[in-house]
Length: 549
Image 1 (cartoon, rainbow, N blue to C red):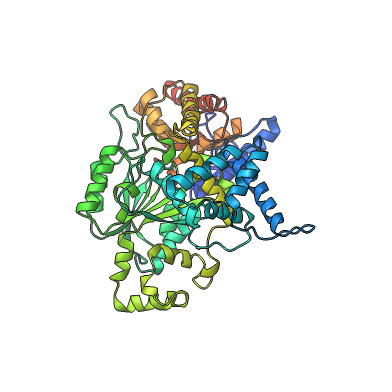
Image 2 (image 1 turned 90 degrees about the horizontal axis):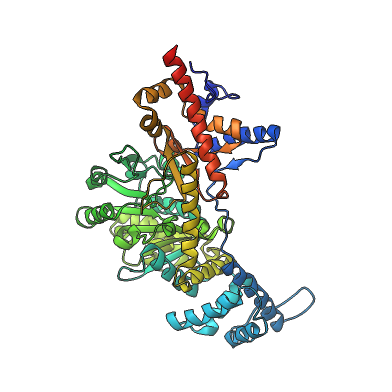
């Protein structure tokens, strides 16, 4: 490291940095946070942690409805059996009318409007029996019984199905229906999917799979764990615009890699993480056509958590539903990472069930023995229901399922969005991240490029592209020779107590950084932009000094 400009790390050696290359970006972030925290304490400076994906907003109205429903549920419990500190199990007959009566005397209570409107609307639109639906909500929020069915409550599943149609299918559902498994967030969905694909012989250790890169690091790391040890084919979003910056789109040549019949599965995060850009419509059409015509056997897992931030978003689960396992988490849109609310959606007519039915006799017999204790006809169990059983080691299938209060909150989030016909909440959250992205670029002294496919939840900046565009190829070469990509992260942490994440940890460009636009106030982002510009300018000054010496 010959350069001695201010960009250079001050409290961590090059040897230490090279050791940190071995870490997940989430673990590296903890080290950067440690440096930022120490600096902040020394200088009485607040840390700006733009490394977190947790939003700093929450959806209040559906939470108001949840807590008000809880009050009504306690009254229902005491109505059945009321002793000091003890109540009974709520009863179904007449419960919808009692909720109306409760609403009439609590008309000023926050959330009561959504609660009563949702019950009426859902009963009318989806043909629910009002007593049955209200009872499911009340008994669910009390949480006094095991989840039944274990995969998901009946009314909750229908509501969430319609929410997914609206948000993941742009309101235009494919023919048929999806079965839905309510899970403990998108991370649990990942674990269950990987496990059940292996257990049911749909994937095997060492199989060739495709990863659409860059992507959420755990997908990359899980694929390389010894249990899976997949042969990974990279499908890279490496298209570059004429002006130089990345578009984070997939060239046709990358999509066409999936024609290879030895590739068993595609794992896809859309919009991507960290670039936060949705696949453009033309590429989606090409990919969908390729699957339908040349690869009808290709298994797809699509994780679409950021889809609600892209206007008109449409998931692969809408385009090629028979091949797709859809993953969705409520965490980012509704600000509920702590609730752990996610779903796995699989179309009722799917290749997974068909592939299991065609397994060799020996493997089918093995699976029949595995699932035999929970049914007399194990060969007829759907793949998604096998996933439910696998999530509880099969033997505990009778106690499987996401906790009922969680399912109730998920239902209320979904109904809130479904009843928001003008998408006021959606436009609000989209405008929040849009303004923050513009503020970041403004702080760097640049105009943010416009992209209708950008969710703007994160933004990924390739500092090498920026350096070459602004200062030319000679400076870019100087930067490569004299600095390490992590120098930027540690310089920001030590100088300004600002935390970003390294983009190469997500299989992005080596000199890229991820900035979360979700978790800091808008006025923090111009400062981060100025800090980035200052750090790079330090290297420019060192380069110019060397050039003139």
